[in-house]
Length: 190
Image: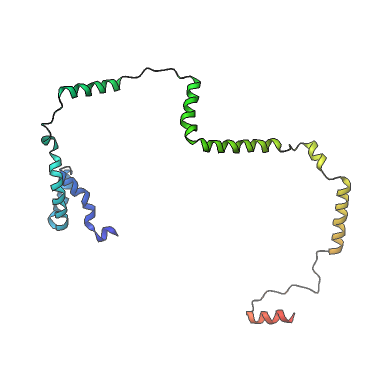
C-alpha cells in the first residue's frame, strides 16, 4: 500500500547510488529516464548530489596531510608489538576452574546460590522419601479382615440398590423440542 501512495520510494536507493557514481550501467538508464519525468526525484537527486560530491573527492582534499617520521615509527612499533604473540603458558586444571569461577559463576552468584538451595532441597526430599520395596508394600497393605468386610459392604449396597435394569413402568420419553413456555407448564404439572 505504501508503494501505491509513494511510487518513487523504490527509486531512492538507486538515486543515492547514481549521485555517488556507484550505480551499475544496466540500471542507470532506467533511473535517468525516471529522473527526466519526475520532478520530486530530481530535487531529491540534486540534494544528494550536493552532499556526495565533496565526499567523493576526500582523498584529494586531504592529500597534503601526511604523518611525520616520529608518528610513522610509533605506529609501526605498535603494529609489530601487537602482532607478537605473548608467551604461551600451560593451563592447569586449577587455572581452568578459577577462570570458570571468575567468568561464569561470580558475575551471577545470586542466581547460582538460589539454584544451589533448590538442589539441596531436592536432595533432602529424595533422601527423606521412603523407598517402596515389596516388604514395605506388604507391611502397609490392608489385612484380610478389612478386605472381607469391604466385600460384605459392597454386597449389601448392591442388594439395597437393586438390579440395574430399568423398570417397565418408567420408560424414558422420547426427546421432542418444545417452546420454553410449554416446558415451564410441564415442569409445574409434574
